Image 1 (cartoon, helix red, strand yellow):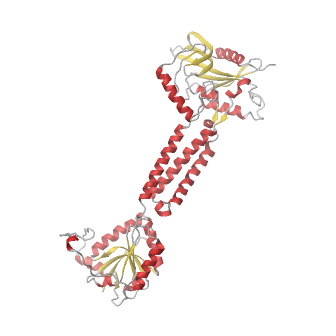
Image 2 (tube, rainbow, N blue to C red):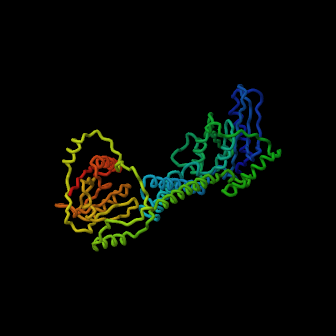
Image 3 (tube, rainbow, N blue to C red):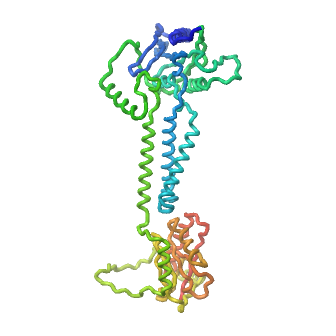
Length: 487
């Protein structure tokens, strides 16, 4: 027996639909046509129309597919769209990774260098690309079926796909038949998409009998997002307005760039373009470029080699050179400030003088060793992590008591410098004090915060400030102590 032609499937399907809708209440006659076409080029193989008792227009359309044109209902993998969607997801994850590091001050260019920063961002993007590709590759979006995609382009109350029952590699399973043998993969995908998009599915046998496999959804699954179009017979040609022609030219130009078919009869003409994904990648790239530029601006201005600088500092210590105690300057070039009497930090306290003296007596006391060798290794750290040094002689010039915010006592200079590095990662500057300047000390170096204070209350207020900063940075060691320095 010869294969079913498309025309025979159309006739059989239209007879079935007339019978299917004959008990629907209506006003006036039912109109049915074959081979209808819209101004936009959308084709309906069958078109059935009547007016309901409520005065609403009811439209049912169907797409007929024979064995000769089976590609209308067999899906084609959308590898190109899957690639661009995955790439857009990868760019988004890469941009979010860069944004997180920028605001959390982690794996920044200043901290680990630009090659490592870009490697981390690239790794985040690759993880996003492959995870997205793996998780969504089986979705309908990436399995293109021409008949289904055409139905998505316009609104109809009910839409049907009518196919020959011999169109697929394995025979269709009807109700009551053996369910053990799996169906054709293409048929399974067609069924899934028909159910998800509310499309009915009919099969036509060689004797032109019709069976309904899936009924269309009574409720519009697209929630009125599809447009209404007007169908006319294909042999009637209607001219387009100049606005429509101009719009079509612009759309065709974009489609040509971003991969959609220009042929109005091609089965590929409803394939998705990828200009939105290109736009997302461009925005993500612009954001990452801006963050990269900002991090480059945040680099320290002094690019001193660390080993050379340490060698220079140690050479100065070994040479015995001391800091100059007096400087000659032109008084006219010195900025004169008068009336400055405020302390280093503004202090408000309810402590009485007696309470203040009682607290001072409870502090640890370090006594300056007036016979300590000059050229000692005391280091002050600037915001750019550059150290300046001074020796014990600087302490000899103070006549009053001094107060110091002690953070840690350490046995050697390398350990002290390591502590400063940990603090610097959280933008907390510390200083190193050589304890050879004092009598009877078990340790060699101390790490402390801020300056040496001459006022106890001022030092206490500064201690609270640093205590809070350490807790915000989640340091395990946050207990700070004041130390009194005397001659």
